[in-house]
Image 1 (cartoon, rainbow, N blue to C red):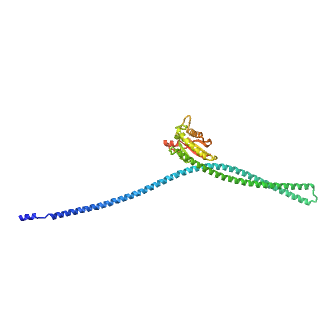
Image 2: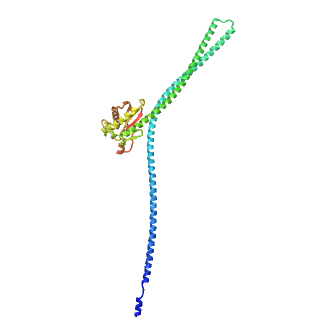
Image 3: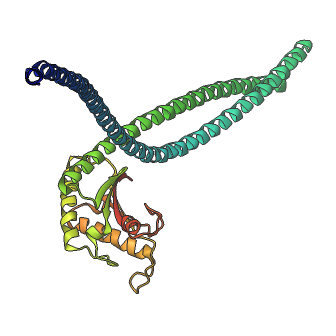
Length: 368
């Protein structure tokens, strides 16, 4: 028993403990390896996502730049469209004025054509008279030949026959003189008709050139006038340029249902008058320019003792502005006033904003 007890006490547990510790260490190393591999994979995945995110950010920046360029291009195109619309309206106005001048030239040409027709009729009459005189001369020559033959056959000539022959000779000479004069008159009339036709054509060309030059000159002064007026008045929502017209909201110049210029409106019109005087001083004296003032209202009816309808109100407001400008020294022959009532709206809608847009005063620098 004692020997068995000693053998049991003599058992060594250290190798088993070392084995267990080694196994635990291998497990820990395996776990650490798995964690390291997972960390590497996760880091690579996060890096890939960061790179993809950076690439997307770069593409987004490029798209933003392209969008900005497209926006700028669209704005430039809209500005060019507005300029082209203004130029088109100006060209239409210039074309209408030129058409009036051409109509006047056409009337003059028709009058000249009538004069040419009259000359041609005169020439035809002269030619007919010439033919008759030639026929008469041929008849007299034939009679003269006949008389001469008869005289040759006769041995004795009477005094009466000799007198008749002399008379016929004188008549023949007079007819030949008249024929020469008629030929000369016919040639002069034909030359005069050709000269008049050439002069009419040259005058038409000169008129077209002069009208085109005047139209371009007036367009230049109109652009300068609107440009200076925009600089003086500044950027305002209630004052804008529409085509070849400068548009004021009625509220800027008048109180509601009134044709008396308000104090604020007088300040605006004073600036307008000074600008117009500066431009007018630079214009040639023979340039037939006129500042046309057009009054417009909204379509809501008005019926007062002073203004039975919107026509009277719009006309009275246009006249008030013309009288104000006249008082500042603008020549009256350079001013015109027109009232259109509610019949030329800018916005056909039935809203307060549309009514405000339609209540306006339009200024247009045009030609008579």
